[in-house]
Length: 422
Image 1 (tube, rainbow, N blue to C red):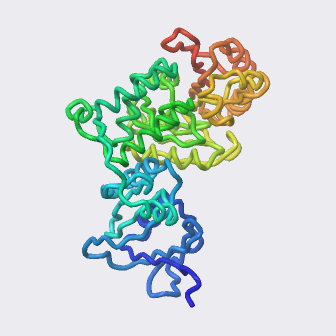
Image 2 (image 1 turned 45 degrees about the vertical axis):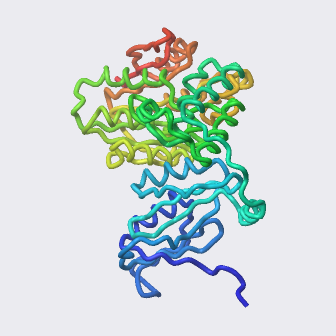
Image 3 (image 1 turned 30 degrees about the vertical axis):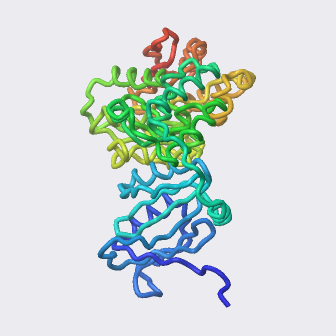
C-alpha cells in the first residue's frame, strides 16, 4: 500500500542554477550535497521543500516543454512575492488559466531545464467544494478605469491622503502591468484572478499596511528595491546619505572599499556602488532574511559581483579598514516607539527602529570602532534623527573623529552627519 510521497527528482544541466531556484523561489533548505563523491549516477543535492524531499541531479535538460508539472502550496496573498522571486532569476512566467471564484490563485513558471512549476494558494478541499457548487452566474467584468476609480473612492472615504496615488500603484501591481499600459488600455477588463488580487491589496491597504509593503518594492535613488518583513522601506530622506558621501569623494572612479552597517534592503550600498563603478562593498546585518533581500537587490541592480553580504552584530565579524563606512542605524529612542505612525510601528522591523533609551546606542558602537573600521582619511556617513546632530558632534569628537558636515534633507531637517578619521 502506498504510504505517501517519497521524493521528487529533477534533472538539471546546471546544479547551481537549479539550487538557486529551489532555495530562493521555493524556500527549500539544502540538506545534502554529493560534491564529486557521488553515490548515485551523477552529482546531486537534496532539499526539503515544504516538508517534502526534492532531489536535484545533474544530467541533460528536457528537450521540450510540457504541461506535466509539480505544484507547491503557498499562503494566500503571496503570489506576487513569489512572482518577483522567479522573475529575479530570469524564469519564464506562464500565465495562469482563468480561475473561478473560490478556486485560489496559481503562479506557473518554467525553469531553464523546461520543468514546469506551479505555486498555488488553494487546497484540494476548497477546490472540490467550489466545483460541487457548479458554475455561478457570470458577473459584469470590471475595467481597469472602473477599478481605479472605485479603489480611489474607497481609500479617499477611509481618510488616506494619497488615495489616488495609492490606488494607481496597487492596481498596477495587482495586474502586473506598466503605468503606460494602464493609460493606453483603460477599458481592458480585469480577470477574476486580477480582481481577487486587487481586492486583497485593497484590504491590506485599508488595514494601514504601507503600499510598498503590499507591492513588495520601493524605488530609491532611481533604482528598484525588493522588500521583506525584516527590511525597512527605503525613504527619500535616506538619499541624503548618498548625496553627502558622493560629494565628499574626490574621485568616483577610484577602487574604493566600503561597508554598510545595518544594510537592510541594501539600498545604501547598492546605490553607492551604482555611482562608484570601481568600488567594492560589504553589507552587514543581523537578519539573514534582510541579507538575502539585499543580495537579491544588488544583483537585480547590476552590482552583485562587487558586493558581499555578511551576518554580524554590527562590526563584531568585520575587520576593515574601509575608505567609506555608511549606515542608517536604528536611531529612535525606545520610549518614542509606541508613538510612531501606525504604518511604521506595525510594519517596519523593530530591530531597525529602536536605538535604545536615547536613540544613540548604535552610534556609540560604530563610533567606538571607527579607528579600526576606517583607513586614515576614511569617511563615515551616518543617517541621524532630526534632533541628534549635536549629540553626534560630541560623540564623534570624543572619539577623535573630525566632523566634516551635517547635511539636511528636503524638509530642511538635519538628516546625516559626515565624519572623517584624521
